[in-house]
Length: 216
Image 1 (cartoon, rainbow, N blue to C red):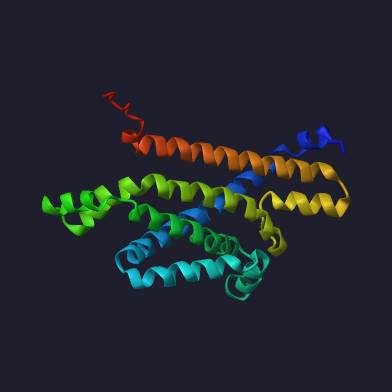
Image 2: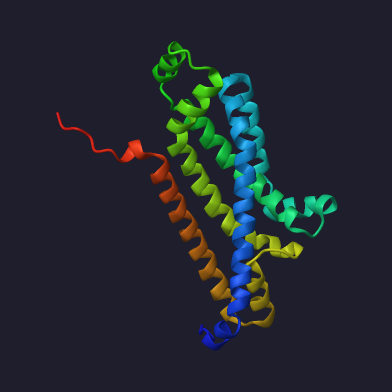
């Protein structure tokens, strides 16, 4: 299987446009997933009877085939980017919700009790104590959801979107392997770059994690 390098040179602008579109769809879905999952996770963490229900619903949604989700959304949002983002958001929720709940669960009870003893209100404790300490676990979920969303964007090609996925259908239809190979490589590069960026963001947001331990 050979690559037609001249085709890549002739389609640089198109590849750039598709890459940006691909990344925008994935990141929009993760951002929307975070916006939904954070309050739901707090609710699941604080109200234990709701924990199993919310996590169970997210797990059920995750079992729906991706193509089926896009098809079910077509009568509502049509052949638009909105359909792609909503579909990807559904898949990101199971990871983001579970990791956020687990992150909040990992915060030591003594830490929360100390904040309460100091007169800190529950909302402030959540924002300044619980979320920062839960951040490493939450960010792990964000990284997984981001990489997963980038890989799933291509499925939206079946509804007329799909970013780099359009290269796959183009290559298969013409029996021309170059677009397929380029699409796969660019998708992997986007996933690796996004994951590396999130690692850097986590590093900046958790300075206490990189403080050297004192030897006894």
